[in-house]
Length: 411
Image 1: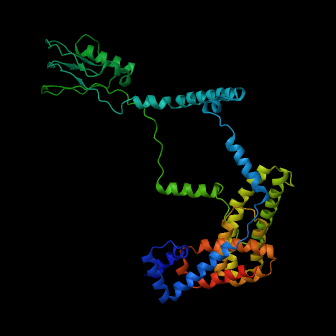
Image 2: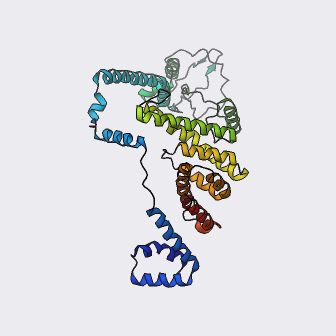
Image 3: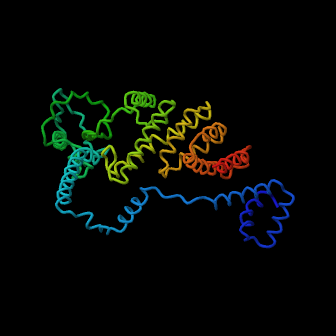
């Protein structure tokens, strides 16, 4: 069997739950593999240490926190109707104000877009055709600058011009002036009207009689379209974006601190906030006068937004510069905030142990016994998590684990 498969079955071997065949295979492999025997020995030691662990008394605030959750869950929940309408003295006025605000906003938006809706209804382009059967002009037709008169000779009655336009759309294309002009043209062609003045003088007719003439009705006014705005090019957009980035304030959250002085200041403030929170657990109010719930939220927000980002910088500085002072301050804040359920600081401590094990152990040995107990628990938890399923990728994993076990044995 391979070592990885054998090591997975070691725990079952100790518990005696392997089948007879598997047990024989594992024991046969252990006889020939020193590495797996060593792993089995360390596993047995670990189980022995766990069995010898003392019971830890829960913190003072835990009982109050658990009871508060029990009372909150036991309280009767309000139905949807009660949430929406009760208490009436508050919900009814608020609902009325909200309804009025929505109505006013709707009317304002409708009025602002109404002109655009009307413009959208107009057709983009329409062609009005007028089919006219022109008269046959006699040769003795005389043309003057004021108009056109027909003298003598019987002229065939012209056909009435036919307009292709629907009645409901006429107003959209022809103004009143143009409709009147069309009626005058019709009357003149039929010989019933007077000459049409105001037109430029026509050229004399050619000697050859035309076979047919066509007239086009005057086009209606073009639909009024909304003025198009100039669309900036990609370069213009890029300039606007660059300008906007310079002018507008940066909407970025603060990154993790980079200086040791700033990190130590964050550690101190976080410890002070936590101390005030612990004090409020028994009295209901902290030394600052703030209530328990407010302090709890403040500690959680500060830990998530300020303290946790500072831990990344702490790890980088300690691993890079072998900074003993910063690591000592970090252990102090871990001891002061032992009541916290935040696991991230333990992970950071495990990472620091991987890069600076000697430095961490030297500081650990100078702590008092109760403090060593707190740090050892956090270090053990962090080390096991950051190395989980990575044992083969860490060259000195077993050496580090052995050194960590020795810290527990000396307590």
